[in-house]
Length: 141
Image 1 (cartoon, rainbow, N blue to C red):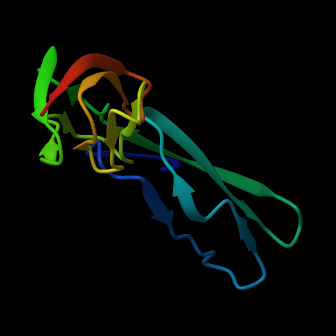
Image 2: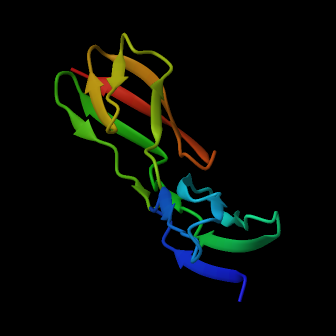
Image 3: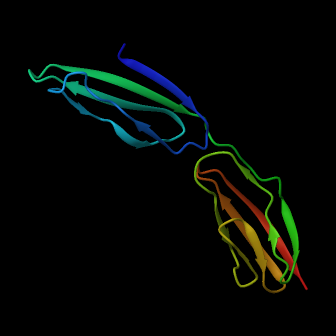
């Protein structure tokens, strides 16, 4: 058997592939820690005998795709009252947050609004899989 398969959850970022030759004179390449992306990740492990003969093993790790959801269309916030953005992300990595107007409302790396003064800002959330959502935040006194 030279092909192996493994399914992992969306939040698994790496796999550690361990391989060793049965013969101490053989060499193994391709083992080690490997980063994963959504979908099939194919890794080859090659065993080379002293005489140069090789066998290649294929390891396919299928990672579920992360799912991003943010039900917010707009939010209201009061100056100096921190407020967490309601969102879910089931994949590896963390979403990125940005404000179109950080002088009115900032946003922390964990998705907490930091209302600073009255006005409107557009918040952009970008999930690690590239999915984006935007919504307006109205800040009042």
